[in-house]
Image 1 (cartoon, rainbow, N blue to C red):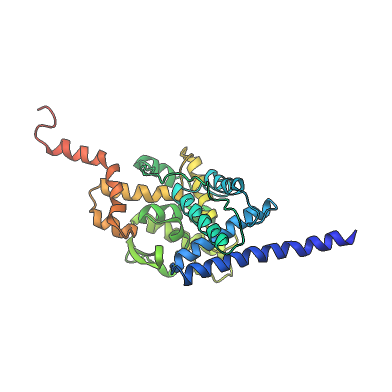
Image 2 (image 1 turned 90 degrees about the vertical axis):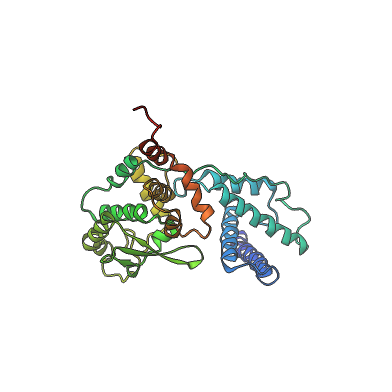
Length: 320
């Protein structure tokens, strides 16, 4: 009776080490032979470890995975769950490319005879315009965290900062106390590639942060020495999943459930600035876009502002 359990306890770590060995070997190939960047290597490592956990839950190994296993993995990511938002087509596209490259490498090394990604189909990268909230919807959302409880003060500051500065989710949870200059009304954000930028803070965002720093954060952090601005109930750094849940909870309360996500606030920030007459280059700098073409998509969402200016200025736009 004792032998099967002993075998089981030995086999699982061996399988896990085997998969990690395959991943490390693949990443070494990408780094030293393909010369890929550190950011790309980190992304591929994260993708493969996520894939490995998916296979482990199925009792499957990477060398025995079928095309169905790979397709199911991508489908689960695309659907999302209560704990995790649905992955975007761009993310699915990247993870698919990672798995294809991984399995091609395994075949080159003679570890596989067939490639489970050979017939893999991936969604086309969508060019649809992002979802944007109206100014009225923004007011409803930002007004949801009510009261003076620490969590309410944190959530209010969190939402105000994301909309005031157009931050990505990773940039928001990565903010340190030292990134704030409330006297000058400025915030330092660290974006993709560790690039830093300075973004102005509006009066309401400053007021919300100040209230959180006075009456919310100290109670959440307690005796801990925590550098992060936004923390969870245990006083540690707020995670991406935690941020997503906060935004979703208040979106439901505001009647804005559905495709609402932290990134919706970033889209709304950019669109509302352009609609208000802000210079495209200034919006590009505040968003941290390397290419202004990425920022230009928001000009398509500002038609209402253009129509308003047109009808105000053109002498023959309206009847006299």
